[in-house]
Length: 131
Image (cartoon, rainbow, N blue to C red):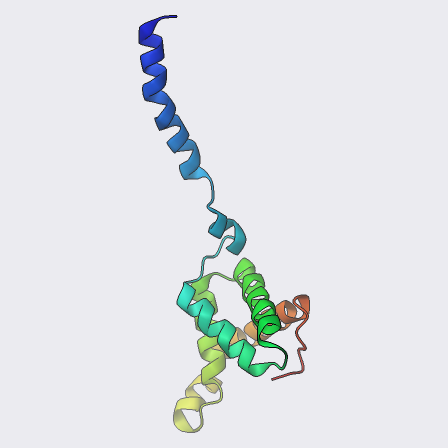
């Protein structure tokens, strides 16, 4: 064999492997789908979900994580952030609450969020009636 060919192969092989692996999704990306949510926001969502639904802690952590994974597969994080913030702010009393309730775009986002969340809960076997 030609020594030059072997040296070229040794030089090019690592670069070719690196190029192939850079384009491949990581295990975390494959699990979360196309929309990656920050870990802290995932934790807050799951903790709130667990607190709202009866059941053993382990069972509800699994189910609530499932819910967020289903939401994340459909909704980019920036939209999730807008929808969940508007939904949480909707119950604020007084003038500040009226601002949220009076903006049609925000009420549409709240409605969409509740629909996406209800479908995800149903798919993850969480009682949608529970608070």
